Length: 518
Image (cartoon, rainbow, N blue to C red):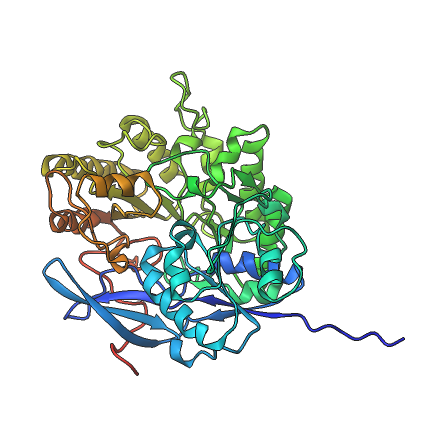
């Protein structure tokens, strides 16, 4: 008997072009770091391959084509909306049996819908996933998507692609909305990162990013060691995912890291929602140390693009009890941030957010003195670069509050530089983003403070909300001012990258582009 090989269905997984907002002088007023590591694709590709699909990356973020697609008036300027990367029109809509598109940020919504509308010409099923699609699926269905995934863990994907490709689903459909209005609520238990298929070295290599001038660590890999969060901050979408908190074991995490190194990565982004939440579980603290010290033994460095919650680096592990011990856990801090000049942590993003005033909505933050004490412990580990993230534009913010904030941070920086004169300290000042589905976005609209509904402006730099005391453009001026609180050794070359936010006024792209069609 002759066995006939069955061709695996092909799926093109698209990384959409980046969105830029350019003024008349060519300055970009949003973050446009295009060569970042492809965190979600590195999870999705091997998982679909394990399900019997021939999933392939289609990276439309990694080219130099640019095209304007509109404009928006902001802060007295006309900004040109421009997508940068691969040419959408050059994509063959019939190149794969099905398409998968990921969109995690509202700022990429308009460009993503342009990609979907183009793909829809090929009469192939288009499945859309990601945080923004989960929150407001109707935009993507209207653009031509076949279905929008409502399960961030990956548990819905195999059965869904079976269905859209005309096969009998191997499992009950779950966590998906179709263009015809049919909806299947999430019924299947969310997948844990422990269950995700490991990527091949080739897939890991395709998903590498390039981050220049961070202690010479250019090739950057990625690891998502957990999903979900134990917090319910009102500005964050993670609590809406419905996954619960699920983590990867140290043994599996180290397998991922070893693959990253074999693929060429020297540094690894751990882009977890709440990596330190594992410390709330028995043996969780030991898991953290096993992963971080294991990375050193492998010879790769770890960076924290989503930041680490400092409250969870205390002896009380971040529990919100009155009796919680808020003293630094020095061993844990050394494991997370220590740098010996070769391996460890070359760059730490610290989500300080609002360490002095406006703390009510940010339960994870520490009192100011304890915060400063912990920051000093972090700097003593020798970490060479600290990016300090602050959120402003809270409804009650006024000039006096932000002046005091500026003074407090400046004093802290002086103390940190005394500990390590070689420290590169960068302040990244972000404004409130009306993330869909979050209580904060609802409250901003209800209070009449949200000034712009154009999602291209919903980035970390283009302020879109007034406060009760400041206009949005005054908040933007404060962003520029606070972002200038930075210290660098004379020999350090600053960079406009994935974590540093914007410096001075606005950033240009990492690669020069020519506006308009080329």
